Image (cartoon, rainbow, N blue to C red; front, side, top):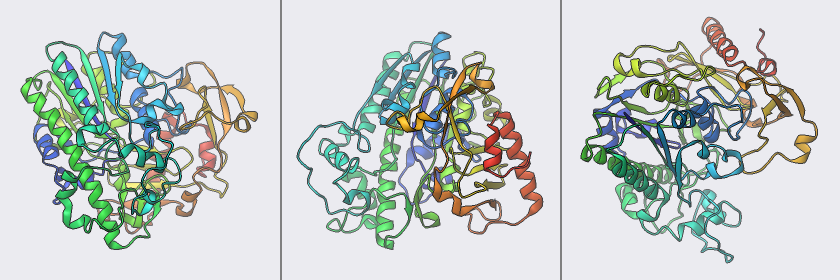
Length: 495
């Protein structure tokens, strides 16, 4: 048996034909839906990038105990468990955060790995002179600071689609498939940073959206800033079209994988999983991007597809509530006949794929220090901090790093060595203060939405009975995660 995971970053489900989009050119996503099960209630867990990948490795939520960071010494890792159980695991990726301080322990869990440089200001090509300054709007317009300056330098070395990291990543994945198609017991993870911003593509993909992108002599806008939309309708349309062009490029890469599965006759013994870590706001709610605002449906409700050769179900949809970042690890272990780690909270999805067997009543999601959110598939409840200080809030870690750097000396001066939580396997850990993060979320408070009546989340609901029920789900799931006691205090939850 074999398994292939295709992972995208920041893929908005509303831009895909299987989820109702009628203007983005993505025929291979539609083709995938016809060859697999499409999930209609797939949700994120920990956000953003590396927290979601820690969920994937460990099968349990990251965001209640620490912010962005590496795998911890006490963490289980599904790719490592597979390798130790005789299943070769191979990662091909252009996701640069794996090779920074806050992600440096992930790729080494695989049997083998390949990395391709150049995404989003990756410190790749050295150039002392400033790059040509473009006629640009948004983050593109500021080429004085990294990562914007470095991104402009990198783009000079990506004049053709095949020069872009995404294409190199998928080519390497397909090469692995070809060389190992006759072998058994392997797992391949093909992971691209696209369609994460900046939405950089070649003209062949932009030409699919010529009317929306408009006059090429005007300012280029393919990299929005995180926050409120302040641009004209014309610029918003252009940015959405650049995102769509990048989705079309992702679709072409996905099509190459599907073609190879056809050519190599892999459908009989190979599981295929296609998913994303989270979505991206493209002007909905008058907002760009993620993190600084609530995790609305455009970012939290994600596309997800699975082909399972055991049940061979295709061209069907599933309503069961799933969380790929938590569930795919246990699903892979189940698929290869291996025992799950005792601290995993995700579920194997074999029965869900086969007959829509439900695995959970509610799903918890959020990011460290932000709102904590819960959904039962119909309602979403978002609970913000109870005070302006957003405290108490701590990181619990043996790997004190942020995205790109170690914790500072000042952060560590007040650190305490304290007993860890149940899943930390008897380790004592550092506890450091993390209060005051994500202040922009305080303004939103608590929000309740009925997705059946209000799928676009335009009018928060006031219903005490529903809110109480969702709070009960939230508290029960936090207890299952062995959440720190101060998280309940921070959120004003009486337990």
